[in-house]
Length: 58
Image (cartoon, rainbow, N blue to C red; front, side, top):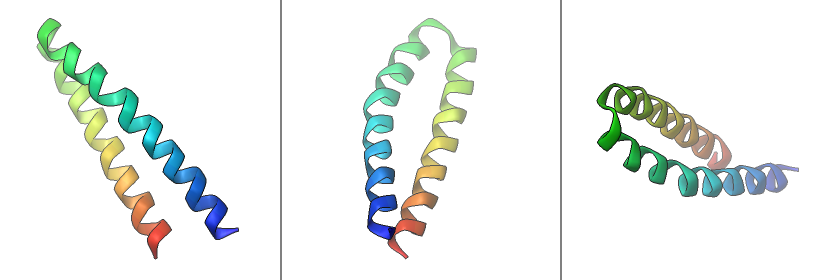
């Protein structure tokens, strides 16, 4: 059961890291206020994924 949970987490991590950077890279050029919220959301996402990874590894 544990390995299955870990597997689903890692696949979600991969899809997130694939789709996020491209979006946050194109946004800053257009609108700086969007950049700030995008960056904040991305940071929250990164922190959440780091936490999930730590939990999965423990």
